[in-house]
Image (cartoon, rainbow, N blue to C red):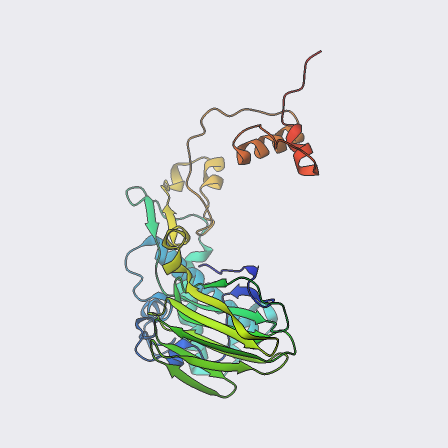
Length: 342
């Protein structure tokens, strides 16, 4: 649903790149007993809707939004299977693959993804309004680049996202050639994977590991209960170390998490009673559409520049410009002021 991405400078020349995909073992392999990991994996031997609901976010229930989202996930998985096997739009007939599990899984996903092809959403009236989606459907993977040769600065904070994630991985990657030692303590269970080995650190227990050289990596897998780690990074250039706080974004900023999980259920009329223009307006855009709003009193503008200036005015909340305009942006702001009539 949400694939999150951001870049920031944090510590010792650290840069953060957050994404939504990961390969190899994940938190469900290393941390046993988490509620998000209790669901079965995708299996051709289980009923289709139950498979996808269990695999991606538990019980789809009766929510139209969750059902549509489930269809999109199935559609995406079909595309991944086609790319991996060279089938469908990539040339080969998928029936040429002599694997019963593959064929059964493909048919199941086709059935689940069927509603994506529908041009119009089913009529919806009483169910319209605001909702919040909190299903566990994705893998969250964030990469933290560390350059121990950079000059230490003020304490930094790294926020990782576990919103709607079945598994969370934080990859610490060495960006320079100077070895760095990282030590810290967390308020929840943490799994650490370094090389071919892994270990689990209990809540409140100190941990320590080293990034030895260029392109060296260590993966951290925070448990569902972990919200905060306090760490220190040391090197021969900074033996005292520099502090870094690692926080779960949903706990640090619950208002942002609530906003990220918010969605609108829009009123959708029956297309059979609509004219061609209305049918085009209400055509399904699958979760990317916003609800229809009252038109109000529109104001027609003559030129494209007038339209641009109106957008600037709306974003700024008025026509007032900075007190000392000196940039191209502020010159554009000046143009929003009405011209003097002579």
